[in-house]
Length: 467
Image 1 (tube, rainbow, N blue to C red):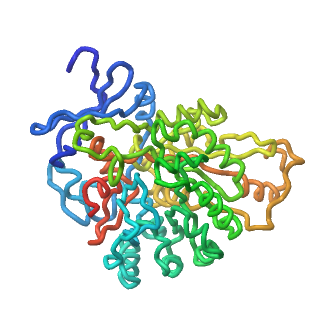
Image 2 (cartoon, one colour):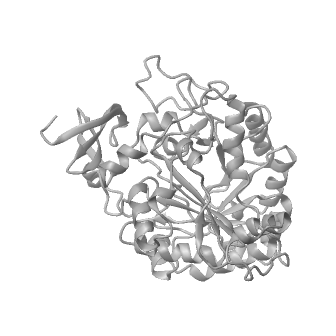
């Protein structure tokens, strides 16, 4: 090791050229942390893991509770050195899924310059799963899930709303017992087709995870290839009228919308009755993106990369009410994958973090390894399930007579206020071929049910397995 460099952790990565698993290291140098790996054939690759080493050190101290899947679907090598080339999941996977994605289509009604699925507007629908095939997938997930609490379900693509039978798919999932059915959408059809949001709400959709990259059209022009802000606003209004909650999902690219993070938070607060959260996704370089070149793989860091630590620091700088110390990693995956916190908007417009000190220390599960594993799993999945409730139109009340939520003493009134004014701020740092970490992959709690019915960690799926 060179002078001035310190190895903080060792893991396994993958060569982004030949895809062979290789040793990888988190190395502190000049106050930051880099993820570094060397392929014997293709050289050294490195990317930023944390802009400030103290953030990395503090974050990785958090305790982790991993509950393995009930059973393996594929078989990895005994020495566990080939991860993630045996995903399915194999017997070496350490964390059962919280959320499982089913891709309903490769088609989309947009063609974004940044797209993890490489979706096309004229995509082939012949490969889309039929209703019968989707039902079999749902039945399989019920078999694979733990007793008493099915996986949280995400319907994705492509753009799932291009399928006219999406409401029927949602209803079928709910009828089978899936308590949480999330729809990942760009919002175009929600905005343009009157009554469509209510169709999804009535079918049992839990929340719309809405592609929302900022509050300026110039952001959408760069990330999506067209001005889309008005469509996003109309989609949110339609969801509000239908009583269908929304969480904003920005893809965050350095130099494109990192200066707009604070304005996005302001927008959330102005619309907290329907926008119940924001889920930041620092850009990951898989799928389609403008920087996709062979030279880019060798440079390691693409120009637009931002870490989740850097994102949280920018959030605090732009809106000091959202303090860096408010956030912690989830406890049922890997500490470098996600962050979360919960808030309430006070009657005077200020915000208060509602994540207690104990939960900051122990994460979502809020327990230790001695607790029954099913309790951990249910708390993990229920945390997601219970954060997206909204008041239906006409239920909103005027809370301006109160200065803070603590002054609302009547239980029913407080529950109404809490329902209308709480929200989450979360983020997920997806991996790509340059920073894929086997330890993170093995602890992935967001998995994709592939075409051949394997459960594949999301980042491995999009980096290696997506066709």
